[in-house]
Amino acid sequence: MAMFSLFYIDMKPKLFLTILTFVLFIGISNASATTVYETTGWITGSEGQGFTFDFTADQAPYTYQATLTDLSDHDSGFGFDLLFLEISSSTEMLGSTSEPGIITFLVQAGRKYFANVFGTGGGENNAGVYGVEVTTAPIPGAIWLLGSGIAGLGYLKRRKLFSA
Image 1: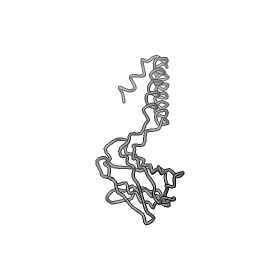
Image 2: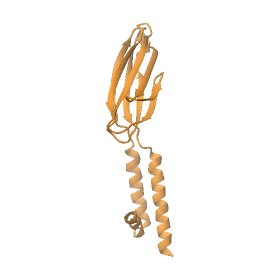
Image 3: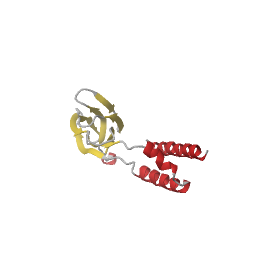
Image 4: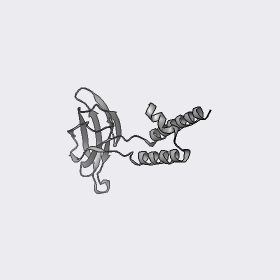
């Protein structure tokens, strides 16, 4: 912390603002999700089918999102009467959705998790296509903004202490 604070003592305000702007720009532009697992598949029949896919949590940050998507061409008579996604570990359920949507959940590094998809075909053809994508949840730009605000307050405090 002392080294970090010394960085602000001799810095000119314009240089500080330039560096702060650069950090904000890089931080916000790098706030993107990384795909951990992705698959698509067919569900046919009115009696229902279920599939289980596993993935390992090996990418930080350890807040993940699972997205269930109905990829069916409804105009051509495809779709679902029921579409369900559950995310679980070997010991607990972490979240579920009974329609296309997003589940946000916390994981532990190195553990195996399961995406369980269940559905019944619908439409004229009694079949549908689904998509499942598991991604890391990006750090929002607000976190970078909060951090830069705290750094700016630290700069102002140092400036005030050493100018007196």
